[in-house]
Picture 1 (cartoon, protein in one colour):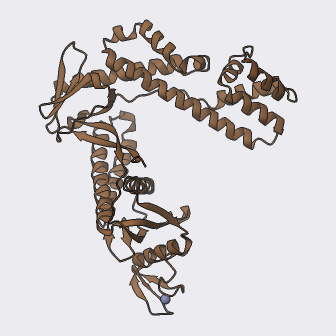
Picture 2 (cartoon, helix red, strand yellow; picture 1 turned 120 degrees about the vertical axis):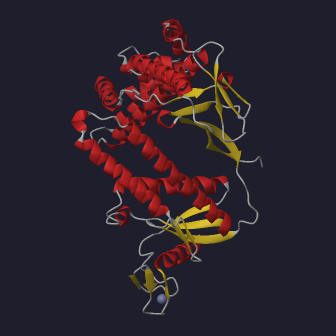
Picture 3 (cartoon, rainbow, N blue to C red; picture 1 turned 90 degrees about the vertical axis):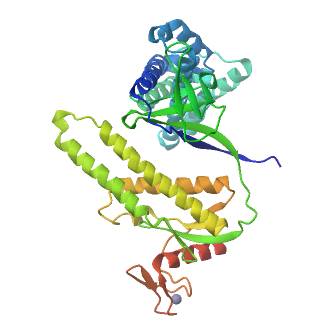
Length: 434
Ligand SMILES: [Zn+2]
């Protein structure tokens, strides 16, 4: 069996602060990059351009002819990446629009089965779809023409065409980016050397040198994210890694997910004990920032400094989360992890002081990272039924009592930390169901 691979993003950081002059040069690229993207969005994001965006040569040629690249003075290595970046967004936008429309078709009770059949058919035939949107004559190859004649016989075609056009107008969103904080860079536009990376800039044959904290060299399309307030940048490298098989990872474990602590395992081991401290710092910062922002709204204060501070706290929290997940996997050596599936409502009414949006969003992050890391190491992550998981006694199954983080069972006398009890139940339920 060939080794299975998985995609992940590696990050690289500058080891010394980037000078203001160099940062300006990089920001020039980011600004042009976003100008090009917005130009492409505007010119090709609409209905009329639908036939042009697959496979995209037309757009590429027209963009060359547009003269925008010369006007901006942006090196072609950046220019065409920006074009294809934007084109990718437009294609995604179409895919999303189509799937939203498909959902509407499924749920619309006024449509007959024949109507649905017809709509699905014309949406699948991209040629057909485009013709309908642009109110053109439908021309299909012979074999498709025959099927088309069949699906259109029992429907009010004009009515359905109108319906489709209306749906597209309703679901298409106008694409635009205000972000001028980064750009993609192709292999031809950078070179790793001297303990850092040389990046092509707008001045001909000139490079900006960024010393890096690691010595890794990649031959991929990179994404450069600028953090001008801090004089730094982050390089995102998409890489394929082989899925690791750890022979000694054989255990089945149950894990409880907490608000204050990230994880408690069924053996009582605790991971991410400082999770709430990091999260609280971030939530407080966001809360205070919002209050300040609302108070001074008329003066229209910049949020750059705020955003930089927020990013820093978030990065610290994420680093901590990742380190603790790694530590758990390394220590517990699991082959399977059972995790209670928590109902949405159980999240409400937790620590009121924690900004709930921040906490929910970070919880999503914890889960996302855990499942990514499990996939990378071929550890199975299984969700178990979560109802009553913290109220049931893991020893005898009776409903017990929770007080001050301790679970006690009146039936069998069990007395143990609440989360540990929940984790033991997760393991028990996982074993029964599998
Ligand atoms: Zn009991």
